[in-house]
Amino acid sequence: MLAYLATKDQFLKDAPNIADEVQAAVQDRLNLRVPTGGPEYQSWQNSLGGAMFHVLNTPSIPSNAGVAVEYRLQGRRERIDVMVSGFEQSGDRVVAIVELKQWTHVQPSLLADHVVTWVGRGNRDERHPSYQAWSYSTLIENFYKVTQSEPILMVPCAYVHNSADSDVLRSPEVLDLLTRAPVFLKGEFEQLQEFLAERVSRGDGGENLRQLDTSEITPSKKLTDALFSMLEGNEEFVLIDDQKTAFETIMQSVRSVPQGGHQSIIVNGGPGTGKSVIAINALARLLGDGLNVRYVTKNSAPRLVFKQRLQRRSRAGEISSLFMSSDSFYDVEPDSYDVLLVDEAHRLVKNSGPFKNRGENQIAEIMAASRISVFFIDDAQQVTWRDIGSTTSIKEWASLLQTPVNEVQLTAQFRCAGSTAYLNWVDRALQISEEDEVDLSTTDYDIRIVGSPSELRDEIARRNKEGESARLLAGYCWNWVSQDNTDLFDIEFPGTDFAMQWNLKKDGQAWMDAPNGDRQVGCIHTSQGLEASYVGVIIGDDLVVRDGIVLTNPAARAKTDRSLRGWKAAMKTDPSATLAKADKLIRNTYRTLLTRGMSGTIVYCTDHETREYFQSMLLQAH
Image (cartoon, rainbow, N blue to C red):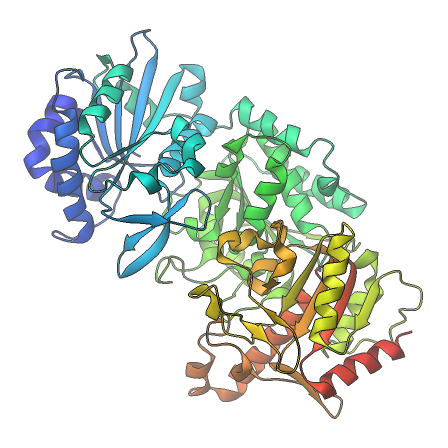
């Protein structure tokens, strides 16, 4: 949606008061209030009235070239800073995207396609501005029909007009990115002028921008073909047994919703029932049907890992735009999407944004943003204080919004060697449910309790050397001290040679698939929704057993763990309900960790009596 639109000449006339012009346009057309004199207002005056004025103030760029400021992408919160439109010398339509940054000093980041710079009150990892510009252009090419039918060529670039840190912004690691979206630095406004002038040789009065603004939203054939080619022959995304039945039930339900209608679909299934596999297949099929569809999760780990697993089979970076955070929908227009596929829906929260102060409820926002919302959920995998996603809450919101609900239940279990008995054993051992005696004697699933953390570590290392994907996981009972000092170890046991770090920052949420992932320890935040052939689980002091009774202690969680943040304040008003909620979340956390393994789970308990309890439970089941 366009906020400010003018010709180049009009923009130059508006430049002295451009912050006021853009402020009014953003409020009128985007319904966003930006305070006068605030950081965003000042950035408009500095970057637009200063930096971009000097770039566009040249006869080499046509006077009637279109200039748009603050263009909000359809169905997204993100806004493109500046777009310049016109015609190439060949006569082809073109729109140049310019991502503006006021950064002064930039440092290298451990994260791919990121840099570290001062934002707000401290240094933060931020996406490289060239990546931002390229990702916006790719999204438009993938979903805006006018770019495919006219066509309109998208040309991205970035302008960091206060920084000369070329060693970082043009480091060898981002050379491939710079070929797609070059970055211009302090003192290089003439080079940016030449770049724009070479591409916009004749003006269009902003017509290309108007056509983008009114374009039909539909996936491109290129995008659909890319995703189908990645899925083809990829065994980890093949549908098996009732996964196929559930998938076709969803497809039929989507097809039955008339234009203008709404529906919510709840796909309920425990660990390893294939919820994510169904979601990825549905993404591909619905794209093939020409629907505007996205895969959505609150936790970024599944999004990143599934993108990486798909892209191993192709260099098509285009699919990145198909994966979104559940934080993305609090201020988008109603029915911006045909279908939203919400994986790990139990992790949805009330408020969005970095400060958790945006929006009202992610369930309601997702339902409003799409005609059809599909929630893949396991009520027993809520693991943080803020998690509100549940089958009951989804139904309540659907009723309030007068949206019909269709439910799909998954029963067959494909993780843990397909052993439903093992899942029952986990629930019984954690005293989540009062399961009858469990018989593990006929299962092929490898479950063991070990007597030392070193033995656990060495067994996982051995599995990796033999070519299996094995990972160490732990309850969040150790502070993440290595986050600020990589020379320190996070998890240590006195009297042993065990000293390891939490999953390294450079791997981020994709740690589970990182090449050296077995050398670190993962937590609930980087493993939920994912799996490995073997997992070694460390049960910390937040869950202990006394006289055969499982007890939980939220105070034993690390200070750096935010998953239970809020429990201490809640204790002042309702201690009984607070402890009950914390107890449920801690048990759910270990239930989730203990069900990540495809072939086996090896367990070490920090507490001796707890270790003996789990060993006795295992002996009873054989």
